[in-house]
Image (cartoon, rainbow, N blue to C red; front, side, top):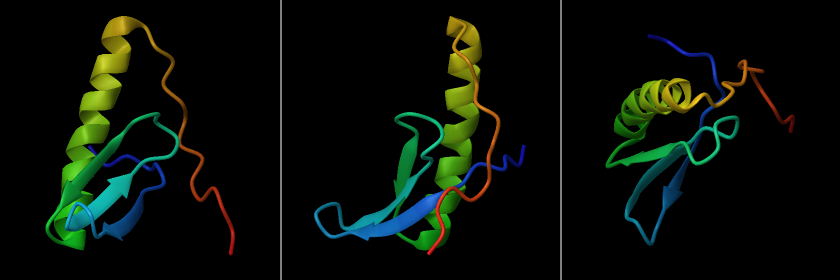
Length: 70
């Protein structure tokens, strides 16, 4: 499934990998050796986050799109 949540991707020197975070879903993040891999991995984590939230009755926020402006 293709979710519309904002994803922030950045390089982490200590982890030696790209980190992909989903600010709207608390604790939802992933990593990858490349930008593309981090993005692909976080899509899986978003699905797992939503599945887990449904199981425990946690509210699932609606995607708001871009949260910050430069």
